[in-house]
Amino acid sequence: MSFFRFFKPLDIPLAALSLGVALLSLVYATTNRGKNPVLVVTAPSGEWRFSLGKNAREHIPGLLGDSVIEIRAGEARFAESPCRNKVCVLHAPLKAGGAWSACLPNRVMLRIESGGASEIDAVTD
Image 1 (spheres, rainbow, N blue to C red):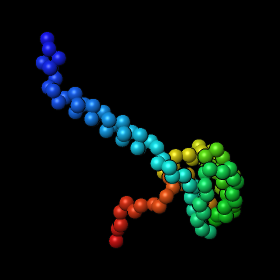
Image 2 (image 1 turned 180 degrees about the vertical axis):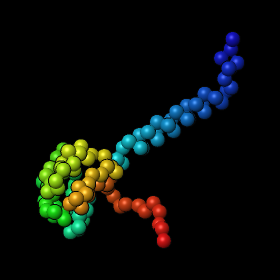
Image 3 (image 1 turned 135 degrees about the vertical axis):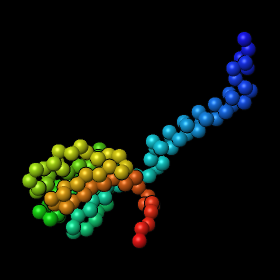
């Protein structure tokens, strides 16, 4: 049996090219491409941006009172909140781009942006 009985001569380079494209796509999708992630906090009183690169504890005024946001080791979370059930405080820390958490009664929302200028996906009338 010959090797080329099952494969044609161009099958091997085509398979290698496909594998290379798949690996490059995986690397591109999982890296941050040099952009620093940013925590964006939105509340009735305004919007704030914080770097996830340095530890901080910020008081954000909301509808019911101050929510305390803790940034540590590249992660952000609600440390304290004036809401009744404290579901936001129990939520896991945010660390990946696109992750979000909110304290709905206090109207405070946290989200992680991967940095750089944001792009518009769609425009509606």
